[in-house]
Length: 316
Image (cartoon, rainbow, N blue to C red; front, top):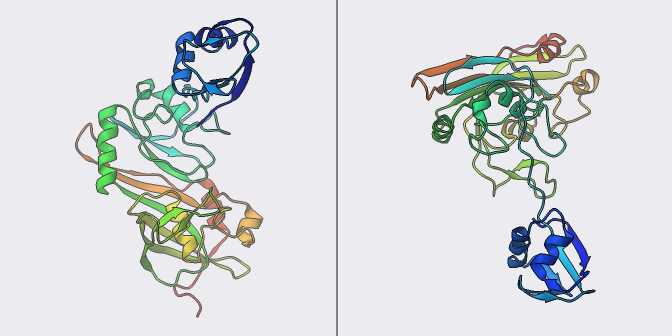
């Protein structure tokens, strides 16, 4: 991606690379030579070599490279750690916390907190997402795996690829799901016009979710809701949110895929009622299976406390 374009006027006759280095304090001569070789520098509209002799008064345009992203910094932020060994850390992420720094969220993320707690994670995998094995949306709470070293990251990524890591979510959905259990097998891809959203698309990547109804509930006004245990067998972006919305039962509080007219969302203003509650994987350090459970957070408990148990069958 191209960066800022600046226009310079040569203040003397000299080599092109030397002039750029003199006129742009942020560029060394070698950096100027790289830009010239890439065709990012023009003299009076023409691409020239580094040793081209520019005359005083000539115009030089330079396309500066975009700034390199800053490395995430350690920040002393409390983490709810439910399991750790020599290879992994399992945290219970609160809703509202972003996983890694990004535009609009440069700090106070999971990555910043992990770097303070376990400095050895720095440099493990992606420099902007060190140690991150998988992600949760900002407003989804629950269990996340962090790899402490490169070998652990590779081993856990292999388990995800082989689909041997088991994840369970609790989701409160709008409406009454008719089936007690089911499989949603619908491909997911980027929405063709709403680029911030994913959608069920024939051209999308395979996506499979298995679910089991845990409880059917109703609000005092008679509106129905369903608490489900959901098991994503694939790991597509926003998979559970997209799949349940495609069934006509979006997750309560989901402003992107649900209905803001839902009274429960409007009155209680919850975040999306989605919690990663259980995680099972093989620890790279011990070779033994680890099972971790994250209790339901208070905000979801409070929402559920406003609802009443409904009959097991949906109204016809």
